[in-house]
Image 1 (spheres, one colour):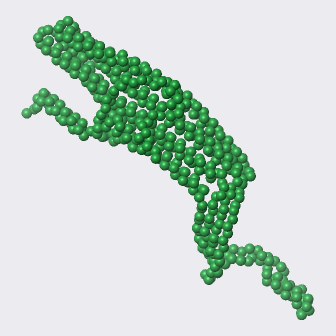
Image 2 (cartoon, one colour):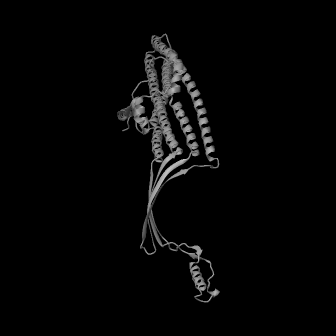
Image 3 (tube, rainbow, N blue to C red):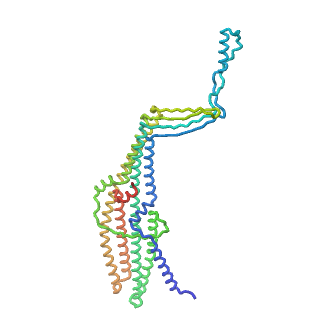
Length: 474
């Protein structure tokens, strides 16, 4: 026996309702505070910035390592398969000739020149087959300007990394807030569109009831039905937009895309005074994290100038070593020890203009950073001015839109009453509903614009809750 169409629709609707309740009950509920924590813990940019801080900290310890004593221990054993040889006067010929020279001079034997052996060089070896050496070496920098400047440069690089991390945290929080409130915006717009859709459905039901009593024409009923079908795709579109904005927030937070989330919070507008322009500009110049990062970048560039310039300075180091050695042809070693201490002074006189060119390149890099800082400063000031202007503009829009919503609500109510009394028509109801929906949507968008501008201004002014900085910057 086949199931009737009405029963099928009811079953499908009931199943969809059950699945909706199941998904909502298993969804992760997140407020703005939790969203920021999720992002800072999982955001890749924040992780990379934190790694740079750890890397810079390790660089400081490495730089100090060049100033600490250096101790090396080494040992080796060597066996000559073929001993090295070198040309040397023939000792045998030398001794033989000297002996005959004495004998001839003392007239012990008669003089005979044939007894003398020609003097030539002969390849001879002065090495033993086996040798070993165990040695301990020690060195300590007494003065090296490159090492000292390297320590200073590494500390400045660490400060630069910390400030860059602050900037990344600030930007991450700004991104999270915008994405979070963007989801709340689409959710509220979906609710407004759904309410408008319900109004259209209620209106259609009323029209059908009046049509059954012969109080309205078929034309009015068709208009009411057209209004319902015109709003239906808008509701579906807003549902997709709401889902897409939530997926975008998941990416920002580093949450699994398949995990369901529900946000708690409201897209609220709180009346407050717009900050003064000049005070905000002064604060941005002193507190903006991007500008502060660029200042530290200038310090690092300046430190590199001193670092390369230090090649002109002499270097002084103390050294010493102690060794234990032995040599033998048959492993019956003759052992001996040796030790030495001293001081070494070195200074480069000419290096093919390498040092001067390195210094020049560093000076140019410093000048480039100065130009970048000036450019960023001008851009930041212009952004502060623009955001303050946006806040003032949006604030005035919201005040006007709140009154517009009240008027649109009254107009919609009057249009419905007029239609029920027979003095109005369906076109008035449709126009009033559209105007009410548009008024509510406009206000929501303006509130989102205000929150976004305020969030951007906070980032420009370097306003970040200290607890976020303290968590990641030790």
